[in-house]
Image (cartoon, rainbow, N blue to C red; front, side, top):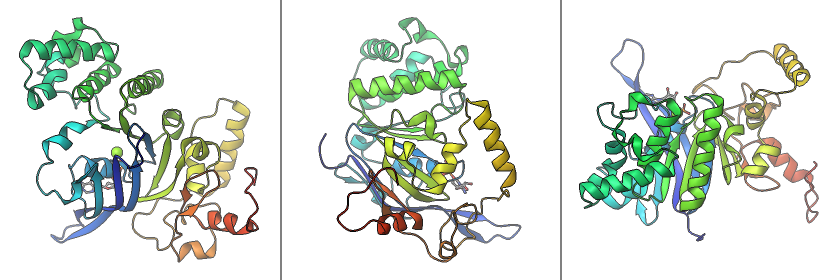
Length: 341
Ligand SMILES: Nc1ncnc2c1ncn2[C@@H]1O[C@H](COP(=O)(O)OP(=O)(O)O)[C@@H](O)[C@H]1O
Ligand SMILES: [Mg+2]
């Protein structure tokens, strides 16, 4: 793995101009507020957070589907955020995407063979026969077979359609695939199959992934690092194992607790605790200070007025939370940090 990142996002803002009420005036809504992320060649970054937190806005900015209001998106040597028109062909080939909904993302009038071969038609000089042969190979890579080449998407299940979408994304041997909730529309066992397939292909082909999910538990095995988003902010990031086993931000802990528990006694205890806690609606732009302060069980007075910086966390990464700052301070200088604290 080389030292220089493949994708480097710095202080990215994504802004939509929304019409408010009946007036014609549009007001800005900041869906991404200063996100900084990087992905090394061959690395998988899991980007997690609840619906509406801004994950797809980051994905779409990387893909050039929405403009960056400010900040920088570098891919290799190219500054993508500066490009007002389409990306250069090299970047378009090297960054591919798989979206959430396998029912709307595949053209229903095309055969699966043509869908998988389409990127080859657009970007390479391959003949029809060469493309067909390559499409058959690609289908095998996603555990489908040559027999499927002539079929249409409606003849496939959701999981099979996602396999087709993944095969098409692999066609040009990209360096990065942006996967925006590739398993969210599927049932649980199919979700795991798709994640496992991605895992195998990544290791065999050395591709980097920006893997978006709302379920941290689903993607932590496959991710090298995890970034957690809440209302447009990256509130925590770090090595996947550390973020999953020792989350430092209260929001990351809440996300992990939202995962169903298999043990009925723990499930009951959690339900009781939830009932006791007042339900709070996620505000959009209203809070000053920490964006999570309205919902945070550990909120302190200063959280409501000041925005916490990204403090380093023991075990790697950062958390934008004053509790992480306090933990860092509580350690006498020079003394090694203990994982138990
Ligand atoms: N095209 C758009 N116009 C206006 N608002 C948008 C648009 N796309 C997304 N948003 C808003 O931006 C916020 C973040 O959306 P999104 O990036 O899709 O989040 P996520 O993928 O995490 O669910 C949401 O509040 C959403 O309503
Ligand atoms: Mg989304």
